[in-house]
Length: 102
Image (cartoon, rainbow, N blue to C red):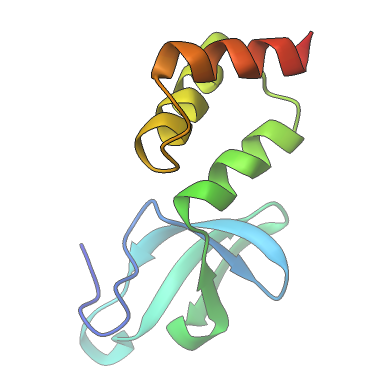
């Protein structure tokens, strides 16, 4: 489900007061504009204006900084670098990342 006014969706990564979270429910009816968000400390219900979406590049950077250098994440980051940032082919980007990890 998507909230049309703020474009926040279930499963989307967001921050709330500097804390990372994931939207678990987009509320409707009398609670339209409210979202249930899973933070590390628990589940909260908050207004959409209190949430800041995490864009794709930020999400990939957070994965990298968290130290998850799995083959799957290296591939995701290489695809992003190649397609979005246009830093050469996927193979070149994958090699660049693998050399940075080594």
